[in-house]
Image 1 (cartoon, one colour):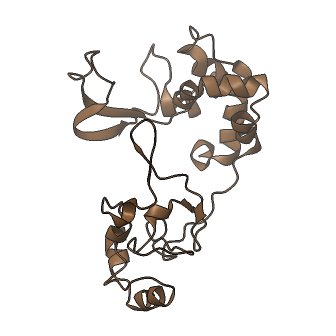
Image 2: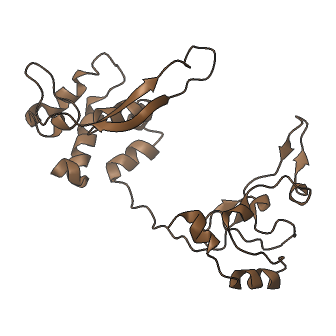
Image 3: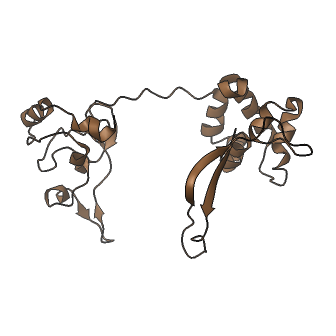
Length: 225
């Protein structure tokens, strides 16, 4: 069931509760209720800055169901002022509950959040390179580069269907292993093989590569298999 269908199936009970809390009644709790309105009532809390644009403040109101930080103008039933506003665009008024993310492995936490350490800074500066280095597949698509002519912000446009290029289990004769091949072929020299295509990049740290490799073999079921 899609989210908009899920929210649209809300019963009238919520509308009765809204009335008791100082809200006007509504026919349903669909996603449309929380879309930003350009009407007069929704603009009541806006302020015009010296730059000539509207400032609606910071998202400082916490959803009572999921704890998300919301803007007051994102409340349900915007036509009424409320000291305890309710929201549905974040979690469907408590109907959608996502499990908390599991803690990242300590190696990854160290590289991502110990910002004062040199190793962490190196990793974050070259994070995309390390991500590509340990990718299992390569993205495939027919890329349309006609719009990347230097006169506008760069964009990524494809035609047709995108795919993942897996390739063969073993590299062709005379070729270096790539992507998933690195996990099963010549594993004794895996670190060197991973860095082979990045030797011209001075930002790659071999110690970080070793730590990431060990982390994947310890926690990633695909690498373990």
